[in-house]
Image (cartoon, rainbow, N blue to C red):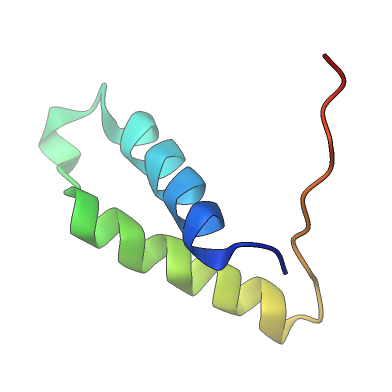
Length: 57
């Protein structure tokens, strides 16, 4: 796994973005970070690995 903090932040941002149009389902940034860590943990437990690749310019 590459920079775990960066991966957590990217996943947390995606979670927050997913809930942005649903104010009745409020998720704050700390909760999104916890969810992101749990997602990465579940992927790790399943034997999967998140790695970075270079994106062509």
